[in-house]
Length: 403
Image (cartoon, rainbow, N blue to C red; front, side, top):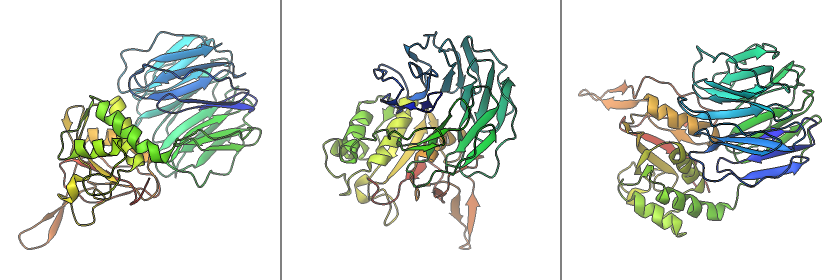
């Protein structure tokens, strides 16, 4: 998502490349043929140019935004791009903190020493300053971008940060919708009532207006940023079938788990799954997102109403088990499980949960011991919980009855 300089328009983009243009932001054809998911879009100050990028580093340039060679040789995925006000420069960044500078955007040393992953990059209007931010809230300021204190006390993870035109103001935001305003960026009330976690934030050129967007395209406008409409998340009733078909057609997703393929076929045809419940479109959408960027194995969906504890959310169509990611067996808190957790956590509705915080092992004397399911701890948004489960997969669930 990005905002025009005067706050009179904005362009939203879904991870599937659907554009939603409002006000003085020009509408463009949706990008097609990309790998992974679309992860970033930035527009020129007047809204007459746009540059979008996929997680695989494929650029899509429109209008007055110049076209650039795709970044190559990066680790992780490309997480964002920011263009200069006139579209003649751009700075892209990978989750591992590798910068790719083009045109009039100044090149900077890659950020180092961060925890989590890098999630957001923003440049000044002339490209002579930039700020990058990690998921744990570490700022890296360059050139004319004024250094700021790292945000602290947030819930979930930090997801987005935006610069004012001259670099004197910064607005940062957590997945739980907590704003952190610095310098000339005007403080705003935190958004509330959103679904799926907050995903992106943008500033007007003077820092007096802010636009924030949730994971399903709900927009929150403040100051001199106009409120013009939300992105359309689509019909929930048809979304489950659409996502199920996408998963079935995606060779990156191994569907060999017991009755997994049958459950997906039922969802694709608008029917309930093997335990008698419809699969949640929200849950399927998250599975589809993982499969756009990684190879992944689904070991369980509804499972015919067996194989899990009584009243399991698997039987309600609201849970999924992952067994492997990119060829690595998952234990729940290993490094590859954390990739899925980081992709999903900010997009889950409140009341969702991840398994494998640890495993309870029963001893001979009847007592139980906590067994670690991996070396990592999950930083989860407010309302998303974790619990014990066996350390041979990663379990993810949404609240019972989630559409």
